[in-house]
Length: 196
DNA sequence: CTGGGGATCGAG
DNA sequence: TCGATCCCCAGG
Image (cartoon, chains in turn yellow, cyan, blue):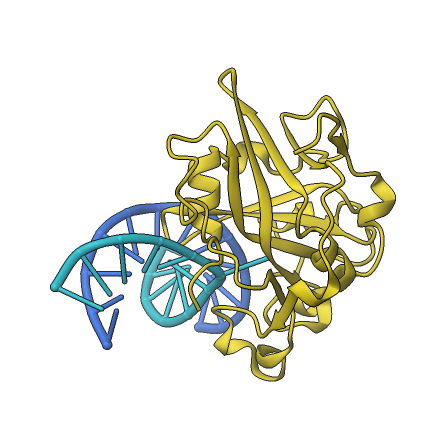
């Protein structure tokens, strides 16, 4: 990690969700909680394409209390509770009229964790939130504002296009035609990738 | 009001 | 393959 790591501009998020999902690989999640700082580099993401995507929480234009953060503009956090025990972190993309988002599925520990050498510590969206202390309390935060306790940073880390793999998303077998769309992206061969 | 299901995880 | 664990929401 370079010395300088800055929040991504709002423009980064206000565009194609698939491109956003690809370009978030290598970026850094920062969470300040209880005076401690947790940092991790994103290694796996999934794009969720809004009203036309059966796997997406806003499919068909659903606009319930749970998903209201997805109707914010790009660059805000959408966090939901699942299976009675886990939270999942998403980055909202595009604008208020297109409720799309990128699910952060895995990351590599950088700072603040009990075992920095364990590449499996953040290998999965539920584990990532559990270990980084991310809960519903962070839902709706602006990930571009230096005032937020939860941020996504760019330290200049670059990936080659050939290092990025695209595959169908995990856990969306119910999504009919959308279940095989190649919207899961991850860094080829990385030790922190969630299991398939 | 109700009940079925879920963008998960880890044990067996 | 299965259980833990509980919020969410569509349907009645």
